[in-house]
Image 1 (tube, rainbow, N blue to C red):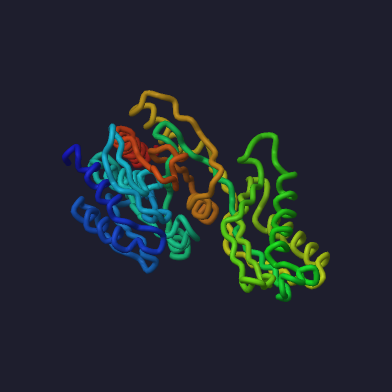
Image 2: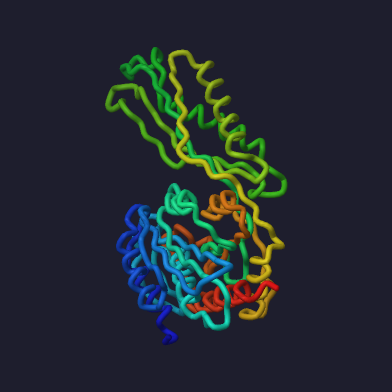
Length: 368
């Protein structure tokens, strides 16, 4: 393989715009590249995930990266050793690095199978990883490709409760607004109560250990010139620490919403859950994490740092469902994720390929 092949493949992937729900073109590109690299059983499943494998037997290591990005095109360009583009950090560099690393394995020196999967919809409802779980996929280890930084390993994520609350009132003339309840103001009042409640639950140990809600969307119906709005919906993304399970958080939200509704005559309040993902903390002492740490030391000459991230990833769903050793690793600064100037340091990207490859070699050696 030519040294610049991984860079060229990453550039192709970045130039293939793939916001959530529109991953098909990238999946087709990766499918053909994986075939050319010698992967077996390369296919797309019914969710649109692309699968391929190398090697055979046991154990099975899954490498899983996501093909989708958040919306917003960024022109792809090289500049000062950096490759810019939407998904450069989150998370096409990890996805491409995984594919290349698996293809470079000397199969005569290992015993076992690598399952490479590029999943869809990670940035929304994780439809891709849920499909793998529903299909009953069996593996022994799973590495997820997300930006941890080449010298770091992510072993924990917070959970997520996505919901929307809708306040409905009776419309009226703004000249007589004292006779009517404004649905927008009522929705804001409910949001303020939710925010205040969870603000009081913040942990002195930091954001990872705190529940943090944020408004992700507001929609108002009715209203217009001269009309008091009669409906307003607020979408909320509530991130959960490991100590707070989804059903517990939901009961808290339900109670707050119901109390608010009882206090507001003439206001109808509705709650709808959109998505739930439990918090997840992986075993820091697993064979998988040891293999990653040893590979990082060999490639970079540093001791890997184990980190907790305040977001939520596919690792949460897969780890909780299968109970196998999992970890998240990938090149890039996660603070650049979803920003207008995403970029990856090319040398860090290339180093991560070596880390993935070294990790696979360690996991696929005899376990005796």
